[in-house]
Image (cartoon, rainbow, N blue to C red; front, side):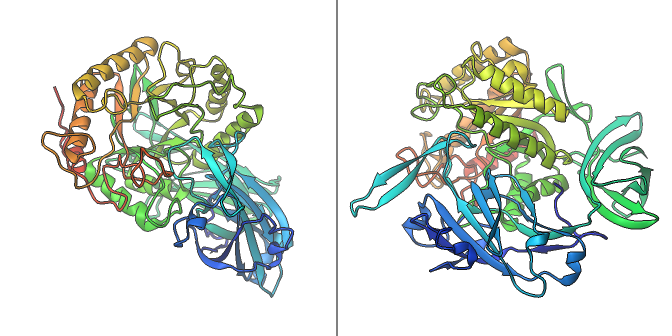
Length: 599
């Protein structure tokens, strides 16, 4: 599924804007024909956005169940000469789509795109109605997993609540852009690009999948530089193109070429698609992460798609501000914790030169008490991890790779975050997933481990290329005691290195910090303590050659469910939720921009 763009053969219309919206408290929307334009008391709701924080009503913020969206649009007559699709960037978590009252698609999974051929369902010369029923309930056969519980209120009504496994707010809604667009009947369905180098030449291997291609069609491939000059060309569904003296894509020079794929029949253009590509290589060698054959140290953040008012709704302004702040700090990379981000985020990472650890939505495959310190309870042995969950995990992981495999910014696949990887049943589960990833793509594979996972008992890391570790010694364990936290961290990392001899990426380390709270000497939750915590950890990293990078948790404060251990959300951000810097931001800028190394 290629990202919808306008080309010589394709038309695109954006359906974003203000839609009609209504909660389905009784779950009777479909029985009452809401899909036929019968919403009884709708309110306006922006798309894309989460619906939770737009209004002032608690019942909307905390709602669990079905919520309905509706909009209308015209389709020009000439569009009907092609196939017409509606595409959703992401809807959390289950979407049921109706066109002109007819149910045409149910999609489960809240962080990846899906599209529908709606050609035969549309009206010519009259308004068309698009209706989406959004359900935000979680279960143990989807990702992230969770459970819905029902509570009886004092007034006798039943209220649903999601018992979630993840530590971020369960935002819901149409979170990413909605497009209607055309494709020819003979069309470019998918493109796969691999890049490499031989001496002073760049090699671009291109594979194109074209529907209904026959002997009368030809496929032409061309690479152009940013000035529009063709630097290499070829023909066929599989082409190997050579570029003399190429510019290699990297954070210092994120140069992008334009790849054009054209399908012709009798010299007539049938379909055309263009995408930006970057020439670079990624590999793991001798315990190091290499970019373009050279050692590369990853500096950056774990992030969230989370912003004031918008929730998880994609917003170009917030995204660009985040990238500018990361550039200012000296970061060169980030992880899409804990789910795939909007494609527009990856497009910008390509343009601005950030390396991306691309993570699937497998967060919460464990059971514990207090975050990072409670006893782990079995989830595989307890039967919570079912065959249905495995198939869903496999599906979303495959769809993530198909969506993102052409981005030069994407340098690694993260298959889960903080799963119960000490259970013996976890090994065949994750081994099968990793084998599938390796069959589809050649990027390194990583699994991110909770600090309670003991390396000697971990059954998954030996199958990976990079070990991801979330570490909070001196915060969740021995809270406030940084000297002890430093000793514990050093011992913990050495155990992982001894056990697996693999490069380690520190995927999370950080502390909750209240902006404006200052203490001398530093104490927990003060800005000074956050700085001292980061310095302590970075002193350890600098002395360990097998640590290939550091990602601070988190880039910015983010919202969580209400809880006694959270003060209006998680405050581990280096920036506030409104993107203002804490003292730690200036510390990171000094280290990452000026290369400060600690003895």
